[in-house]
Length: 298
Ligand code: GRG
Image (cartoon, rainbow, N blue to C red):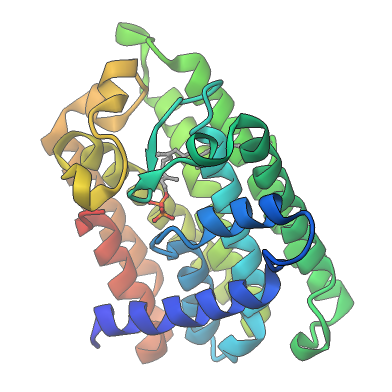
């Protein structure tokens, strides 16, 4: 399987769907819509929506029918990046290789663009339109999984503990770092795989296996992110490098050093691959994506 070609094909599908679902810049309020589109189309990897599509395909689903949920997930992820970059949080100037939203549109517009992306995502999840023909009970389950993954018990919860742990130095411990990683980053990645499985029609056993795959891949993704913050090339990564150490962030690298962090990411990848053993050829994209997650350069 040619992974770069697969990722490119899926990215195009996700981008086309996002373009369809996002309000047009020509419509009022122009600057809000412009700011939403600026961050969405700034060149992200689309790993979460692609995982959602790949999970649906792995269980024999028709991936056209999941594009609404894939788009909603990317909208939520992008809102989190806009807010994370704000002066009140990480105060970053660069994201996805471009000036951050608040640098271009000002703080108030950046906050509202993030708010609008989050809210519109749930409008889409609860009313995807006739093309998607999702049974109401399934729609509700999908929206609930994503809400929980994005909220206090998921991404926002992880972000808060991350902020509170900054500068923790010697007091950093593994349970705290794992809490941050599995919530701040892992929860949305796991939800992507779970939602793909549900919309693809997975049975309970397969859903559980894929949920575990998502959990392991999510943690591996964040450890790879910690490593990239030390060894990455700023032009390739598209954001400031070295900021974790400068801020005394709770990371795997801070706890264990680079080499052990990489070994842990590799171990999680192998465990994720094991969860896919019963799934055959259709799960090949999921296998290759977890390999990509731990070996990525951006
Ligand atoms: C502000 C509620 C709130 C949450 C923020 C996602 C997040 C939580 C913070 C982003 C900061 C960060 C570096 C998180 C670690 C990993 C991560 C989510 C990286 C960015 O995701 P990628 O690599 O980005 O998928 P692209 O740009 O490719 O979409």
